[in-house]
Image 1 (cartoon, rainbow, N blue to C red):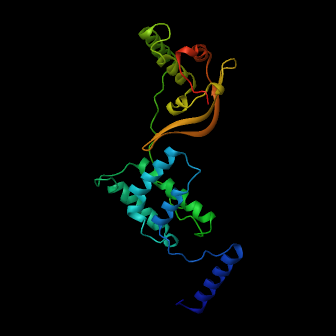
Image 2: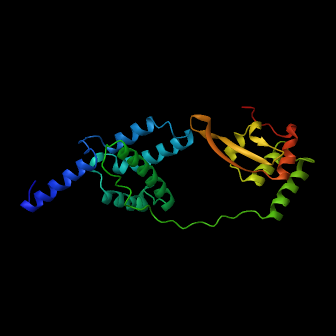
Image 3: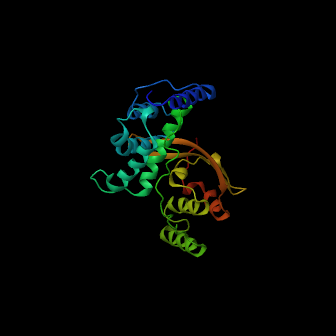
Amino acid sequence: MRGTKKDAQRELIRRLTEVENGPAVDPSKITLAEYIRSWLDAANELSPKTLERYRQLADQQIIPHLGATVLQKLRPAQIHDWHATLLRAGGATGKPLSGRTVGRAHRVLHRALERAMRLEIVSRNVAHPVPPPKIDAAEVAILNADQIADVLAKLNDYGGRYGSLPLYAIAALALGTGMRRGEICGLAWGALDLDKAVVQVERSLEETADGSALSRRRRHMGAGRSACRVMWSRSYVTIGEG
């Protein structure tokens, strides 16, 4: 290295400290694009839908701007400039991207670099010190009790006592639990405890470009007595047996 004797001593101390605290990262010529693609090709821990979203963000927002950079040479300043580029003209037609989309791309990059650090491909996660763009939290509008009753009453009037089969039962379950659409589609009878009014969410049906697939997840919630009364009538809704 070039510099004074003190500069050389400081660099020696830094390198010795790095070796002492953990194995120094071997030099590598792998680019960020090569690394991210190899990670996603082997990312068995991701659900099909999540993997599809990660690939889209990688192909559209990360790789075109940072992909040619050697992984070990990526620096926080480049992450900062990348955010600015995406916010200014990161869309497919050069239009600005929202802070929310840029934040999603940042999280994919952060997760990829965190894995690289665990595998000792890099010595640190350079995305960590750079926060994603701030976004204004949108106020979520939810139905109140009267509005929920009105929705179910109209469905009930639409097709008889339990509405258009199986729409009423699906609506009652969604409103009574807050379950997502994919979770309802992946629901099995064994996950319902109608006596206790509890539903165990164990999987979700996700639609991807390659078709539909079930992904595993686990959470439980109260189903509501009114929703359970509807679900008692099995002839009104088809739920998977698996």
